[in-house]
Image 1 (cartoon, helix red, strand yellow):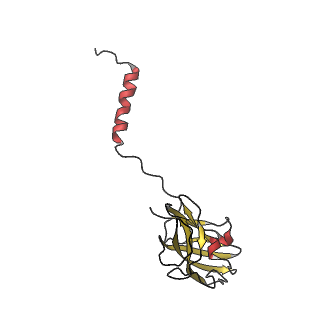
Image 2: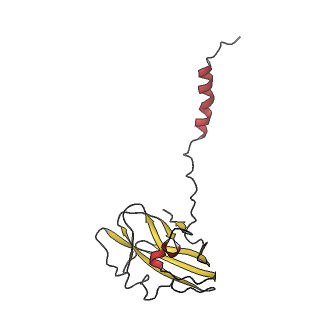
Length: 167
């Protein structure tokens, strides 16, 4: 008859294969936010909006933006469509924001280049069935990573949508 094995030894040895099976770290949890390029819908004051952040340019070069020391300019390219029935009238620099790993992020005036700030905001008076596209420049701390881009209708949190920026 075999010798009795202490219970704690049996328990410890039965756990060993579990640890051996996990040779790689567990996968990171999925993001609740879609990637850039994916359209998202939201409602705002009777306007049914479809919003897409199409591209992020980091850094934004040759924009002529007046930046504080230790900051850089980035550009967010977007499209917005209104299925109605109400008109959507807002400001892109107030509705869109950038979420960075560190430091303050503020809209920046770009007097020239691919993200030139227009005289008339592309989010002004988007009637039912209409749309607009454009670019918003932001000032971001030099060492910061851009984590996400957010759209908040009329610069308020109800109805906001967020896009994940890939590392």
